[in-house]
Structures are given as structure tokens and as C-alpha cells.
Image (tube, rainbow, N blue to C red; front, side):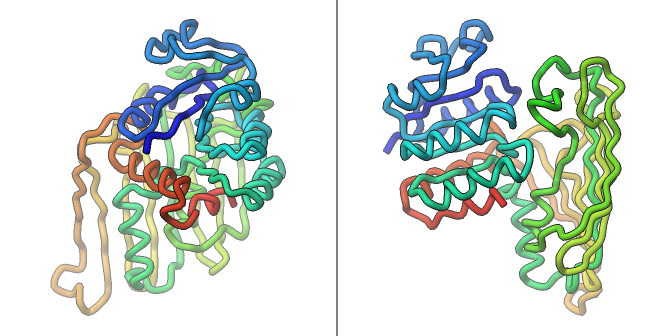
Length: 323
């Protein structure tokens, strides 16, 4: 069954990848909304013929939609989610869906009191390596997890459109932090304590942090660091997710030097377990199936889970993404 989408928030760098994904799913965009832009003003030809609303609430009340797909600023997102839930509309939203945890709390409470589904786009959770790491943790590969090493370094602000609201503190609040959702999900171990040093940018017009170092401790007592920054030349990344246990160690570069949703990625594993004695260090290469869209094939898997939850064919796991 095809579901109708109202797409809200046109000025976002993930818009076109999401639209590519939507084209490959049983979904049809039937109306759009944006307070400042139209599809034509942004050159979005595939949406130009659709009804456009300057107010998302008018779209909710006027258009026949099953799902609203949001790529709005963190400041604007919570209120729009609540308004959609009040009308029984399912919501798929760009992460992190709010400026602060306090801003998000009313949305969490509203989502618990409705039959509508809220999905936050943490699509890395359906990446095959993320799923494999979670399975290894469940099977006891790591033993007791003692530490971790997280890194997300991306291209410099000089290579980015810093006039965009993503780089405005009032609209977004924060900037560079990554992986804070994925590691606790892999380990099933929430972060309990944080010591952070985030430095503001010296780029004119940018008032978010562009580099940060965090010391983290999880509820189980595992400790580690997260280093983030906009440091590299255009189009380049330097990333790592490393997990250290008393029985096993893993290392993974999720992004690669130049990020894409095809090609291949490698997971390195090292174990002191008896069953690994013949080959204690192993490399497992995953070849991605080339698929346009946000997250490629594994991004589609995430969105398919969301749609299954909307149809009620599976339990509603996506609400947990909002804690």
C-alpha cells in the first residue's frame, strides 16, 4: 500500500538523498511546505508541480497525507512533530529533532500517547557493520567492554555553506558532534558521564562549535573519547569507531576517506578467545549494494522498518530512538 507524504523543510543538504530514497519506497510526495522557500526557488524540479504551503500546519489540515517527512531546523522541529501527532500523522524526521533534550521531552511524551509512529533518522543503525558489531556484543565477543575510541573529522567550514541555519546556534544549538547515538546502541549501554571541551568557530557568521573532544563513561563503566572537527580539505573524512573489551577488540572506519553509499567498508576484529587462536586477527570486508538515496541500501532498510511500524506489522521500535 502506497502512503502519501507531506515533505516539510526544503532547504537541507539531506533533502535530495531522502527524495531519492522515497522514490524507491511505496511512498508518494503529494504536498510540500516551507516558510521561506518554494521548490522552484531552490530548483527542485521534481517537487515544483506539487501543492506548496508556507505553513506546515495548513498542509496537515488541508492535504491528505499519512506521513510527514521533516528536514527542518532543530529549533522548528519539535512543535511540528507535536502538531502532526495531534492529527494522527506519522513522522519521519531528520536527527536530532530538537536543540536540547528538554526541547525534545514534550515530543517523547506526545509520541507515547499516540498511535502514530515517530522515526528519527539514525539510519547508521541498519548499516551491516553496525548490526554485526551489535551482534558480536550480544554473543560476548568483546567480553566486558572496557573502552572505546570514536573519531569524526570532516572537511573544513571553508568548503561548506556556512550561511545555512545548520551553522547558526539559535537554530541548531550545536554543530560537529557525531556517533553519540550509535555507540550506546551498539553496546546497549547509555552514556552516564561526560567531560567535554568544545571550541567555537572563528569563521565569520558561524556561532556553533567546529571542534570538540569528549571523555565519556557509560553506565557499565566503559570509558573512552570522542574527537570531532571540521579540519580536512573538501570532501574528505577521517572516522573511527573502536571498541575494546577484555576478550575482543574491533576497529571500523565508517565513512572512508570520501563518503559514499557504495564501494566497500572493512571491519577489523581481534580476539583472545580459544576459537580464534588460529587467526586471532581478522578483516571482514562488506561490499555495499550501490543504491541511490540516504544511506543507500542500508538506509532503505531503516526506512522500511519505519513504514512497517506505521502499518502496525511490527512492534514500534523507532520511538526508542528519541531517548
